[in-house]
Image 1 (cartoon, rainbow, N blue to C red):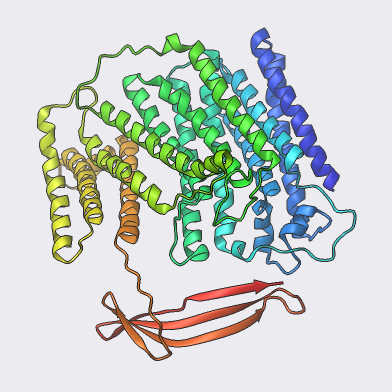
Image 2 (image 1 turned 90 degrees about the vertical axis):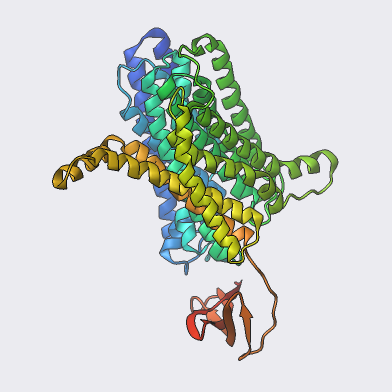
Length: 589
């Protein structure tokens, strides 16, 4: 069975290489037969990768401990949900999952691409090359089908920190986001290669980028929740290198979303939409380089601390992606001239450009802060650490600028904005000022938090004012069912716009939560005996009891842990608010 999985990967590599060569030759020779065979290779690779995944999943579920990967990540007493999630618990399985996602999404992208599209063969060529890269990477560095000469009677099990619902959701969603960014990259590069940079490729790329952005964002949020409940006492984001590695492509992908809208509306700044897809895809590879390459040491994520062979292959792939993209852009540079009239001094276009620049700037800050300690260690041998304060101090002001632009941009016009538009900002500005003053009156003294509240209230009032104004204008002069029908018609006409405002509103809520939890938090170290109480921030905490439990997770095995649990009651004004039960678990076996 293991040999079948290995051969599935080997044949995938061979077929992918054939598909890339056949697609390239078909375009050059205008051969429909070669083009068809190249497209069929994507079907074959998708089927072979599915077969490889099915074999590994079967081995995990049926305790095939002769597989080194199965032995290293499962045991007979592990619940079935964690035996499934063991698929992506290690480097070998996670790369195979990524390969499967890429192969499947490549097929979906091909199915939705018109057969008359002149860039279709180039798209197949690029997707086949990506498939070949992942198949080769797995075979050369991380084959999950390696076996032991003898069959162990029991597996090593899964790390206790990974036995969490976050393990079931976070890695596969994150890898799906990484894999989905392959399609915008392939779409942009194939359009550039074939010199077919029309409106169609931009619309297709934008849809795929939206899917990839949303998926990667969901993976990051689930990972933050997992870190909050598992890795520390309230630490949803620690600016750890592995966390940063997933955030960087999401930030650049956010800039790509807006640059696509910009080109759709003004037919300018095309270079953004050619560079950013390649940069985002390269940064997804960089995320794996950080996580598995061993070039950067993570304090929270216990991956390798020495450089691994996979690092060299990933670094070469990143260079190939970026150099190929810039070479083609240089070759087609004469097609990027702008033919529209220049925009005004204050316009939505200028705000889009500023927002994209700031987003890429934040990504650059996080990137430099992530790799800087490793560069210093490699060059001078000195150990340098950049803590959360470095990232918060540098990235936070830029993030507030982005939030302000979210509130300003919808009111501005494309091209030139009339001067009277500035009056529309008076109400949001006043609402933000009132909110900040009220918080200051009630005792909040943190300037950074007050500024954050001002900015966020300004944006929320601005967004809601815009939507309410649009809907009121649509229903003006109508009554009853006619007014409702007009409002619904307005929602349907501008669903993309209102959807974007809803996402922006959600981001503002996240910023408020982050600001409150980081800028206005208090800590106090107190020793209590059972029955004693302490007053803390308006609450009275009473230490009720302390318990110690030794738990045998599965009888007649060595897998056990000790749980230390404290019970505290929280009351306010004499009424119990809730019971708190913090705990620590020590595992062995």
